[in-house]
Length: 298
Ligand SMILES: [Ca+2]
Ligand SMILES: [Ca+2]
Ligand SMILES: [Ca+2]
Ligand SMILES: [Ca+2]
Image (cartoon, rainbow, N blue to C red; front, side, top):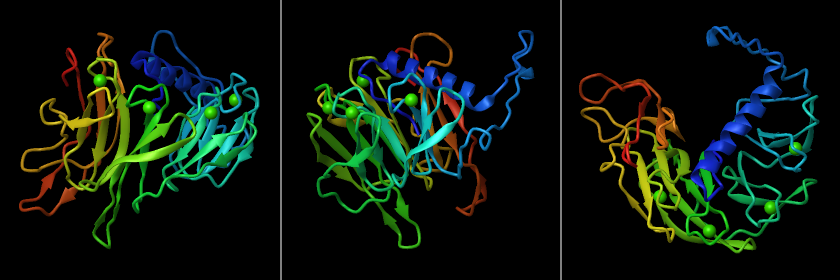
Protein backbone atom coordinates (compact mmCIF):
# COMPACT_ATOMS: atom_id res chain seq x y z
CA UNK A 1 0.00 0.00 0.00
CA UNK A 2 1.47 3.32 -1.05
CA UNK A 3 0.47 6.68 0.30
CA UNK A 4 0.79 9.54 -2.14
CA UNK A 5 -1.07 12.68 -1.29
CA UNK A 6 1.27 15.48 -2.17
CA UNK A 7 1.30 17.58 -5.31
CA UNK A 8 5.04 17.78 -4.94
CA UNK A 9 6.46 14.47 -6.11
CA UNK A 10 9.63 14.80 -4.12
CA UNK A 11 7.84 15.64 -0.92
CA UNK A 12 5.69 12.55 -1.44
CA UNK A 13 8.77 10.38 -1.70
CA UNK A 14 10.43 12.22 1.18
CA UNK A 15 7.36 11.70 3.31
CA UNK A 16 7.43 7.99 2.56
CA UNK A 17 11.07 7.81 3.53
CA UNK A 18 10.43 9.70 6.79
CA UNK A 19 7.52 7.43 7.61
CA UNK A 20 9.61 4.39 6.82
CA UNK A 21 12.35 5.67 9.09
CA UNK A 22 9.91 6.16 11.94
CA UNK A 23 8.43 2.76 11.21
CA UNK A 24 11.82 1.11 11.58
CA UNK A 25 12.49 2.92 14.84
CA UNK A 26 9.14 1.87 16.22
CA UNK A 27 9.17 -1.74 15.28
CA UNK A 28 12.76 -2.72 15.26
CA UNK A 29 13.76 -1.88 18.80
CA UNK A 30 17.51 -1.77 19.25
CA UNK A 31 19.02 -1.83 15.82
CA UNK A 32 22.62 -2.79 15.51
CA UNK A 33 23.93 -0.67 12.69
CA UNK A 34 27.46 -1.58 11.94
CA UNK A 35 29.15 1.29 10.16
CA UNK A 36 31.45 -1.04 8.35
CA UNK A 37 28.79 -3.44 7.06
CA UNK A 38 25.07 -2.83 6.41
CA UNK A 39 24.63 -6.61 6.40
CA UNK A 40 25.11 -6.56 10.19
CA UNK A 41 21.83 -4.68 10.77
CA UNK A 42 19.36 -6.69 12.80
CA UNK A 43 15.69 -6.37 13.69
CA UNK A 44 13.81 -7.63 16.70
CA UNK A 45 10.09 -8.41 16.67
CA UNK A 46 8.46 -6.22 19.34
CA UNK A 47 4.86 -6.58 18.11
CA UNK A 48 3.37 -8.05 21.27
CA UNK A 49 5.66 -6.14 23.60
CA UNK A 50 4.36 -2.85 22.14
CA UNK A 51 0.73 -3.88 22.54
CA UNK A 52 0.02 -4.61 18.91
CA UNK A 53 -2.17 -7.45 17.70
CA UNK A 54 -1.49 -7.88 14.01
CA UNK A 55 -2.77 -10.28 11.39
CA UNK A 56 -1.74 -10.76 7.80
CA UNK A 57 -3.14 -7.63 6.21
CA UNK A 58 -2.15 -4.55 4.27
CA UNK A 59 -1.06 -1.66 6.43
CA UNK A 60 0.07 1.95 6.39
CA UNK A 61 1.80 4.35 8.74
CA UNK A 62 0.37 7.82 9.26
CA UNK A 63 0.31 10.31 12.14
CA UNK A 64 -3.46 10.49 12.64
CA UNK A 65 -3.39 12.75 15.71
CA UNK A 66 -0.56 15.08 14.66
CA UNK A 67 1.52 14.40 17.76
CA UNK A 68 4.65 13.77 15.74
CA UNK A 69 4.52 10.00 16.17
CA UNK A 70 3.54 7.76 13.25
CA UNK A 71 0.48 5.69 14.03
CA UNK A 72 -0.34 2.38 12.39
CA UNK A 73 -3.39 1.33 10.37
CA UNK A 74 -3.48 -2.45 10.02
CA UNK A 75 -6.19 -5.07 9.78
CA UNK A 76 -8.97 -2.50 10.10
CA UNK A 77 -7.52 -1.11 13.33
CA UNK A 78 -5.94 2.30 13.87
CA UNK A 79 -3.21 1.93 16.48
CA UNK A 80 -2.16 5.16 18.20
CA UNK A 81 1.53 5.39 18.88
CA UNK A 82 2.24 6.31 22.48
CA UNK A 83 5.46 8.25 21.96
CA UNK A 84 7.28 5.17 20.71
CA UNK A 85 6.61 3.24 23.90
CA UNK A 86 3.60 1.24 22.75
CA UNK A 87 0.33 1.29 20.83
CA UNK A 88 -3.31 1.53 21.83
CA UNK A 89 -6.40 0.97 19.70
CA UNK A 90 -7.93 4.22 18.50
CA UNK A 91 -10.49 2.77 16.09
CA UNK A 92 -11.37 -0.57 14.57
CA UNK A 93 -13.54 -2.14 11.89
CA UNK A 94 -12.35 0.25 9.18
CA UNK A 95 -10.99 -2.33 6.75
CA UNK A 96 -7.77 -1.93 4.82
CA UNK A 97 -6.96 1.70 4.23
CA UNK A 98 -4.82 4.36 2.62
CA UNK A 99 -4.46 7.75 4.27
CA UNK A 100 -4.55 11.38 3.15
CA UNK A 101 -6.14 14.61 4.34
CA UNK A 102 -9.11 14.86 1.98
CA UNK A 103 -10.70 17.96 3.60
CA UNK A 104 -7.46 19.87 4.27
CA UNK A 105 -8.10 20.26 8.00
CA UNK A 106 -4.57 18.95 8.77
CA UNK A 107 -5.81 15.58 10.06
CA UNK A 108 -5.20 12.58 7.82
CA UNK A 109 -8.39 10.80 6.76
CA UNK A 110 -8.71 7.20 5.64
CA UNK A 111 -10.11 5.50 2.56
CA UNK A 112 -11.01 1.87 3.05
CA UNK A 113 -10.65 0.12 -0.28
CA UNK A 114 -12.12 -3.03 1.22
CA UNK A 115 -15.38 -1.22 2.01
CA UNK A 116 -15.13 1.68 -0.49
CA UNK A 117 -15.69 4.21 2.26
CA UNK A 118 -13.94 7.42 3.23
CA UNK A 119 -13.56 7.97 6.98
CA UNK A 120 -13.17 11.54 8.15
CA UNK A 121 -10.65 11.99 10.95
CA UNK A 122 -12.31 13.83 13.82
CA UNK A 123 -9.34 15.78 15.23
CA UNK A 124 -7.33 12.62 15.81
CA UNK A 125 -9.91 11.20 18.18
CA UNK A 126 -12.26 9.13 15.98
CA UNK A 127 -13.11 8.27 12.40
CA UNK A 128 -16.56 8.83 10.90
CA UNK A 129 -17.71 7.50 7.51
CA UNK A 130 -18.87 10.16 5.05
CA UNK A 131 -21.62 9.65 2.51
CA UNK A 132 -20.24 8.15 -0.68
CA UNK A 133 -21.70 8.35 -4.19
CA UNK A 134 -23.41 5.34 -5.70
CA UNK A 135 -20.62 3.15 -7.05
CA UNK A 136 -20.57 0.10 -9.29
CA UNK A 137 -19.98 -3.16 -7.45
CA UNK A 138 -16.26 -3.40 -6.86
CA UNK A 139 -13.94 -5.64 -4.89
CA UNK A 140 -10.66 -3.81 -4.39
CA UNK A 141 -7.32 -4.78 -2.89
CA UNK A 142 -5.53 -1.52 -3.56
CA UNK A 143 -6.07 2.21 -4.02
CA UNK A 144 -4.17 5.47 -3.80
CA UNK A 145 -4.82 9.11 -3.07
CA UNK A 146 -3.59 11.95 -5.26
CA UNK A 147 -4.76 15.35 -6.40
CA UNK A 148 -5.19 14.25 -9.98
CA UNK A 149 -7.02 17.35 -11.25
CA UNK A 150 -4.83 19.84 -9.40
CA UNK A 151 -7.60 21.62 -7.49
CA UNK A 152 -5.91 21.26 -4.09
CA UNK A 153 -8.04 18.36 -2.88
CA UNK A 154 -6.85 14.77 -3.02
CA UNK A 155 -8.79 12.38 -5.23
CA UNK A 156 -8.86 8.58 -5.27
CA UNK A 157 -7.88 5.93 -7.80
CA UNK A 158 -9.32 2.57 -6.78
CA UNK A 159 -8.12 -0.65 -8.37
CA UNK A 160 -10.80 -3.21 -9.17
CA UNK A 161 -9.91 -6.83 -8.53
CA UNK A 162 -11.85 -10.04 -9.25
CA UNK A 163 -14.16 -12.81 -8.23
CA UNK A 164 -12.13 -15.67 -9.58
CA UNK A 165 -14.78 -18.38 -9.22
CA UNK A 166 -17.49 -16.25 -10.84
CA UNK A 167 -15.17 -14.98 -13.56
CA UNK A 168 -15.83 -11.35 -12.68
CA UNK A 169 -13.43 -8.48 -13.31
CA UNK A 170 -14.34 -5.53 -11.12
CA UNK A 171 -13.83 -1.98 -12.41
CA UNK A 172 -11.15 0.53 -11.56
CA UNK A 173 -12.71 3.73 -10.23
CA UNK A 174 -11.65 7.36 -10.25
CA UNK A 175 -13.31 9.33 -7.46
CA UNK A 176 -12.92 13.10 -7.61
CA UNK A 177 -12.95 15.08 -4.40
CA UNK A 178 -15.61 17.80 -4.25
CA UNK A 179 -13.72 20.40 -2.20
CA UNK A 180 -13.38 18.18 0.86
CA UNK A 181 -17.10 17.63 1.24
CA UNK A 182 -17.88 14.59 -0.92
CA UNK A 183 -16.71 12.58 -3.92
CA UNK A 184 -18.12 11.88 -7.34
CA UNK A 185 -17.40 8.98 -9.65
CA UNK A 186 -15.57 10.52 -12.61
CA UNK A 187 -14.68 7.31 -14.47
CA UNK A 188 -14.80 3.54 -14.18
CA UNK A 189 -13.74 0.66 -16.42
CA UNK A 190 -13.49 -3.09 -15.91
CA UNK A 191 -10.55 -4.25 -18.02
CA UNK A 192 -7.96 -5.86 -15.80
CA UNK A 193 -7.60 -7.25 -12.28
CA UNK A 194 -5.64 -4.78 -10.18
CA UNK A 195 -3.55 -5.82 -7.19
CA UNK A 196 -1.65 -2.59 -6.52
CA UNK A 197 -2.07 1.10 -7.33
CA UNK A 198 0.48 3.85 -6.81
CA UNK A 199 0.74 7.47 -7.94
CA UNK A 200 3.75 9.60 -8.80
CA UNK A 201 4.59 12.49 -11.11
CA UNK A 202 7.15 10.31 -12.85
CA UNK A 203 7.54 12.67 -15.83
CA UNK A 204 7.78 15.69 -13.52
CA UNK A 205 5.31 17.83 -15.43
CA UNK A 206 3.43 18.88 -12.29
CA UNK A 207 0.63 16.31 -12.19
CA UNK A 208 0.37 12.91 -10.57
CA UNK A 209 0.37 9.87 -12.84
CA UNK A 210 -0.82 6.41 -11.78
CA UNK A 211 0.67 2.94 -12.13
CA UNK A 212 -1.68 -0.01 -11.79
CA UNK A 213 -0.21 -3.48 -11.19
CA UNK A 214 -2.49 -6.08 -12.71
CA UNK A 215 -2.66 -9.77 -11.94
CA UNK A 216 -3.60 -12.86 -14.02
CA UNK A 217 -1.07 -12.32 -16.79
CA UNK A 218 -2.68 -9.01 -17.67
CA UNK A 219 -0.77 -5.91 -18.74
CA UNK A 220 -0.06 -3.22 -16.19
CA UNK A 221 -1.25 0.32 -16.79
CA UNK A 222 0.77 3.52 -16.63
CA UNK A 223 -1.79 6.30 -16.66
CA UNK A 224 -0.34 9.60 -17.88
CA UNK A 225 -2.27 12.53 -16.41
CA UNK A 226 -3.13 15.48 -18.67
CA UNK A 227 -3.24 17.71 -15.60
CA UNK A 228 -7.02 17.75 -15.53
CA UNK A 229 -7.41 14.24 -14.14
CA UNK A 230 -7.84 12.63 -17.58
CA UNK A 231 -5.58 9.64 -18.09
CA UNK A 232 -4.01 7.93 -21.08
CA UNK A 233 -2.36 4.51 -20.77
CA UNK A 234 1.27 4.79 -21.89
CA UNK A 235 2.62 1.60 -20.31
CA UNK A 236 3.74 0.12 -23.62
CA UNK A 237 5.36 3.39 -24.72
CA UNK A 238 7.34 3.57 -21.48
CA UNK A 239 8.23 -0.14 -21.33
CA UNK A 240 6.22 -0.60 -18.14
CA UNK A 241 3.65 -3.24 -19.15
CA UNK A 242 5.37 -5.85 -17.03
CA UNK A 243 5.39 -9.01 -19.05
CA UNK A 244 7.48 -11.83 -20.38
CA UNK A 245 7.91 -13.08 -23.93
CA UNK A 246 4.77 -14.91 -25.00
CA UNK A 247 2.42 -13.18 -22.59
CA UNK A 248 0.27 -10.06 -22.81
CA UNK A 249 1.09 -9.14 -19.24
CA UNK A 250 2.55 -10.33 -15.99
CA UNK A 251 1.44 -11.45 -12.58
CA UNK A 252 2.03 -8.16 -10.82
CA UNK A 253 1.10 -7.73 -7.19
CA UNK A 254 2.34 -4.23 -6.52
CA UNK A 255 4.86 -1.54 -7.33
CA UNK A 256 6.57 1.44 -5.74
CA UNK A 257 8.13 4.62 -7.06
CA UNK A 258 11.43 5.86 -5.73
CA UNK A 259 14.63 7.41 -7.03
CA UNK A 260 16.77 4.31 -6.61
CA UNK A 261 19.93 5.71 -8.16
CA UNK A 262 19.73 9.31 -6.89
CA UNK A 263 19.69 10.87 -10.34
CA UNK A 264 16.65 13.02 -9.55
CA UNK A 265 14.29 10.90 -11.68
CA UNK A 266 11.71 8.57 -10.26
CA UNK A 267 12.26 4.86 -10.88
CA UNK A 268 9.71 2.07 -10.60
CA UNK A 269 10.08 -1.16 -8.69
CA UNK A 270 7.52 -3.79 -9.55
CA UNK A 271 6.87 -7.12 -7.88
CA UNK A 272 5.77 -10.15 -9.84
CA UNK A 273 4.36 -13.27 -8.31
CA UNK A 274 6.28 -16.06 -9.96
CA UNK A 275 4.54 -19.29 -10.68
CA UNK A 276 4.26 -22.06 -13.18
CA UNK A 277 1.33 -21.72 -15.57
CA UNK A 278 -0.06 -24.24 -18.03
CA UNK A 279 -0.34 -21.91 -20.99
CA UNK A 280 0.99 -23.83 -23.94
CA UNK A 281 4.48 -24.83 -22.98
CA UNK A 282 5.19 -24.53 -19.27
CA UNK A 283 6.53 -21.05 -18.70
CA UNK A 284 7.98 -19.51 -15.58
CA UNK A 285 7.21 -15.83 -15.13
CA UNK A 286 10.12 -13.58 -14.49
CA UNK A 287 10.69 -12.37 -10.94
CA UNK A 288 10.29 -8.70 -10.08
CA UNK A 289 12.44 -6.25 -11.95
CA UNK A 290 13.42 -2.66 -11.50
CA UNK A 291 13.30 -0.37 -14.48
CA UNK A 292 15.14 2.90 -14.21
CA UNK A 293 13.78 6.15 -15.52
CA UNK A 294 15.71 8.51 -17.70
CA UNK A 295 14.17 11.90 -18.39
CA UNK A 296 10.79 10.55 -17.43
CA UNK A 297 11.12 7.36 -19.46
CA UNK A 298 11.16 3.96 -17.81
CA1 LIG B 1 0.44 10.08 16.22
CA1 LIG C 1 -8.82 15.68 7.29
CA1 LIG D 1 -8.45 17.00 -6.77
CA1 LIG E 1 2.91 13.77 -14.55
